Image (cartoon, rainbow, N blue to C red; front, side, top):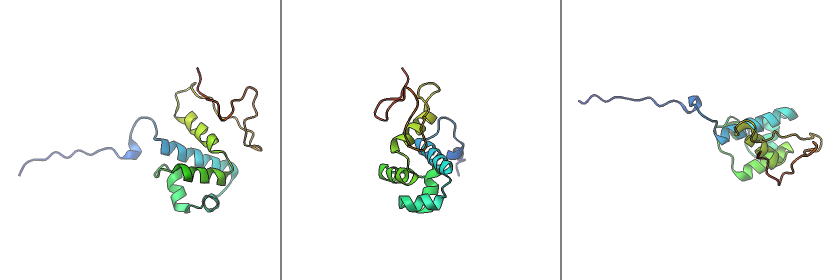
Length: 124
């Protein structure tokens, strides 16, 4: 019988390198939910998704479709653009993307010289 060498691959949770987009989006969604003090069940019900599936998305275990992201953003009363800007800020090298500065009462950027959601936010 031949001697077969077994190699153990690292578990996906223990890999090095930048986080996956699904992990970053999940972290952003969980953070936004926490900022508003909403429960997982409340947001899941409003987004018409099961609490278990929303939990999987928040933990970066499942990919959220664009339709589901739109539904979750609506449930959180935050624009999809805000979610994507926050995710871009998290995965970009320091200094290349401006952090989102929103007026939480309006959900819009109210800082002087702010960039609208349709303008790029990448630094030159």
